[in-house]
Length: 388
Ligand SMILES: Cc1ncc(COP(=O)(O)O)c(C=O)c1O
Image (cartoon, rainbow, N blue to C red; front, side, top):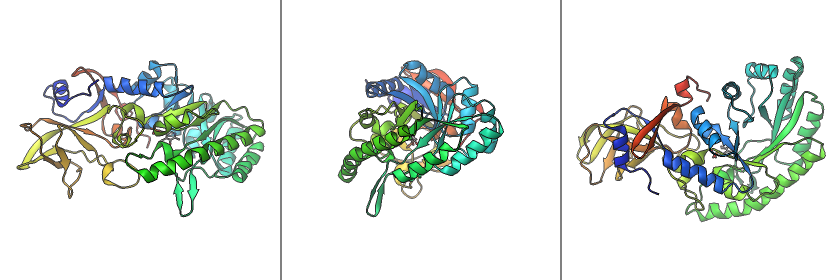
């Protein structure tokens, strides 16, 4: 099936030259189906940071019963989503927001907090105890691979070894107001690192996968030996779906980016997603022959700095940013070498490098199907919410 063409976008916009965020519904459905096809026997938890629209989260959850629960990124967001009716919320990162924790202590259901340090446990225990309540918690253990002079992975959890896991679990024994119900290990070096035409990365991934599987199984065995009633064993992300789904001990995989398929996910050798989320910007000037200028576009993705973190001019083909100007704050010149006779007011279509961050720049997502806008849904920002 074809992706939306430049003409489809132009027809859908029908002369409206303001900047817009657009979801191609057909591509979004193809991506949801790709996730389901590759989930194996695992449930899929949705990474909200990579979606940032409660309406889109609902569309995904309603698409299949295999999509279950959310992995959120702040506690304030988690509480807000729970108020909107979402259930089974695993906060993917530790919260030290005592105001929100106090709120959660008053009604702790549906939200599980992330922990990896004894200090997290002590702080949560104190708040839960003061409120005569409890918190459901998840332990996050590290699955990166340490090589001489190189960490193939990320710095996240403190729990890199069995000794630290025992220290954590021994501290937990003293916390009668905390229930350890979930376990997470995120293999960022597999899930978040593109390997297309990168033989060294491919080799490192091939070395890392069996090692992390062993580590995960061992960590789990230790946690279970302490007698906890673990309901969730979470791992993976979009880029590791096909490998995390092979691990028997895993109960669910978190996926977010696959649904919008941003540019960074074009760089994986083993799978191809359909670009589904785009933003548009109108041509406002032609400063010289072969150069056109659009408004804004300076939406640079987070993480390590590199040129790929700029948005990608997608349609019409033949556009690229000027090396010395890049994607600008209020306007951006682009070289154009394509065949079209572009005019002032015509749209240029871009893709963001990452999935959810672009939603912080737009109030709405326009949903298009068959070159028509069929629906307009709010982003978090459109609902007056900005969490990070
Ligand atoms: C804990 C955790 N799980 C899963 C993911 C995967 O998210 P995505 O599918 O959007 O890459 C991430 C992304 O950073 C993460 O931090």
